[in-house]
Length: 385
Image 1 (cartoon, rainbow, N blue to C red):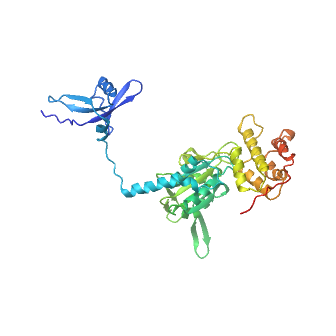
Image 2: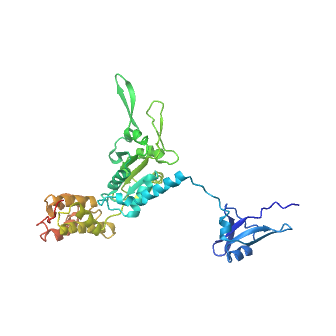
């Protein structure tokens, strides 16, 4: 009887756990039943590859093979020149994109490239981090870098999610009752658009429900329930959604985001700046303000961030980068540090508790920087271009 078993099967021996081995070909077929355990271990100690042979009597045996022989059996994946060139262009754009980031946005290179790559690939992106750390700025900077159509929706200030995301039914004595689509409907139908969903964690839960199908990779549609015929709008090709969210117990006006909604996003966490980064940012924005003053503002912010991030800390919140930029702008406009702190820092801290209050603690911190003559000679002599 003629043996129909193919001879040229080449497998790779893989170690599984501490003592087990398995024999698998390049197509993923397992041959453990044909090759005894002792033989697999023997070949693993030799070349790590084996070829199946059939003797003249029909007996199957295995001998060592080479990596080159195994590689020759791997399926050949052909890529068209167009696809290869397109991918090459995308790679170049992503990995050269850091130069597109402005100096005023402090974000490390890996996170910036990940942000750009996610947008280029049409991912839904969620920027997270404490208030005032630059989430919205990063999103808007990305829009400018991509040079694509963009739409902005502040979901935190939305009182009527259906009106904002779907539309409204109106009455006109000439037209009668008619449906008016929301701008969001136009936005999702715009190819390659970047849609910014700001303050998503403050949005009404109904907004989350409406967005579920829009953000789901397998659905990507919006149902216009109020429209005649209840039209279904498909999300256009290349549309990218970027959301911002404050996540944490500190943000009492925010809601705990639904896990199903979170799973629809690629999450990128914005870093809180350290003192050196803060000094560099403020000095770059306001080079005419004395370096000592800029350093004092950065150090004060850093102390409040440290105090608010530990269990033993005296503060429940901190001075954000947004706030330090505002303080520096006040110094630039002639305010003293004491005056700037009075209007831009102290109101952020609770005064309840008298001498034990957070506000009193911050006042004591401020004393170190406002009783040393720092309010004098606010500006250095810097030549304007």
